[in-house]
Length: 199
Image 1 (cartoon, rainbow, N blue to C red):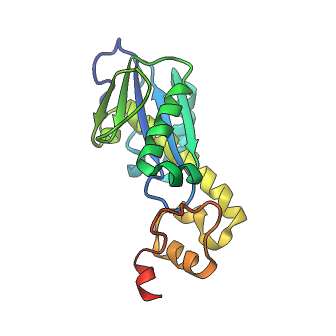
Image 2 (image 1 turned 120 degrees about the horizontal axis):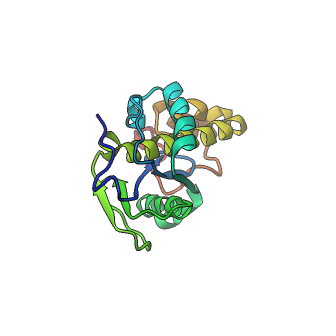
Image 3 (image 1 turned 30 degrees about the vertical axis):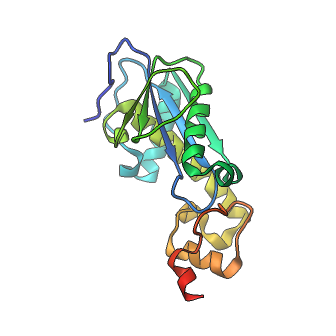
């Protein structure tokens, strides 16, 4: 059972999470969500535990019922420039800045966060399986990123992004080896993995 808040129901708490950190291609996407005090939904869970259909259903509910939500994309070029960890922090900060309500406490999924924002924050390992607002943020980040990768797949069908979403599957790496990279690949990542050993 996910907890509705970390500190107090009277604190404006905002859950923050990202998607796509471990991918070989595409942007990293972050979302920030402030849920109303009395929000409840028995389906709500860490996005990784949900089917694609359930995530899409919950996204509609979250966007309708949230007090505020923000989503941010940080490009693969920026990831290559500042590294994936810093790009994830940047995406999270930008998602928070996109909120129409200023939160009083940020609940960050994971064990690290850096930001120039002055809002207090708490890092929570596996927070998307513990707190409603982080789970909601994980669903938005995941569904927005999946949509984005599905659109890119229409332009680059060889890489099967509509299915692997840019993650380092064996088939994705095989396609990189066969067809080379696209403008959407993260050039600082080990794109071929173990395949490069057999060249």
